[in-house]
Image 1: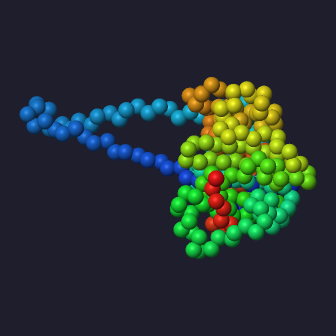
Image 2: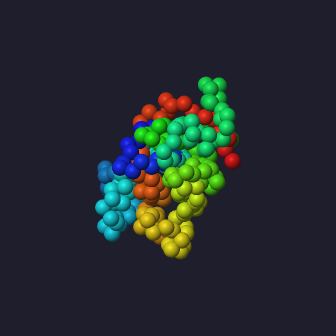
Image 3: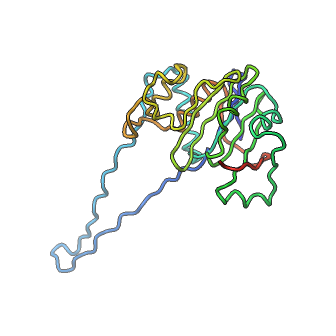
Length: 253
């Protein structure tokens, strides 16, 4: 995974996985040979599809609009709606591995690859970006607990996490200087927008935060989470080659 760092020196750890698009053909009705119109084939009209809800970005500051558009495009192009992305400020890869996974983490071997299909294990890859690090795992179920997210920002840094998984749960959280600023699983269902920090509130609202239910959702939860992560950390994520990085085996749960 290659990331392009913006003017900020802060990094984030984050996480992403797969979107699938499916299509179905429409079968034609059989021709009734006894009908006067037997020579004509009838093709039933496909049922009208509900319009896809698109968020209204017109009220966003230009920077936030660009962030949302960037991550919407990134996830669409890479069919990625599952995973954990974690970003951290100034530190080495070794420091980030120690803070996120603890001492003596297990470097994944080729023999460990089969464990990843069991649903009980995942693997983190770590990429240095400037003076920081980004970590990624594919499932969205191996995200760091709050205390580890806070530890990643200790010493004056900023850390953030964005997750998505097959259960359609999306978490967004971030910390500064060892303290959690905001952290919610299914953050889009936070009904009181005042609970969400002002600096990310407009982006969170695009995901339906402050509403009474899923029907009011106006944007993509994971897209908004990634956009907020970059907003607070100054780190931009672009995909490329992260599978070639050293990976560390981690147990889910």
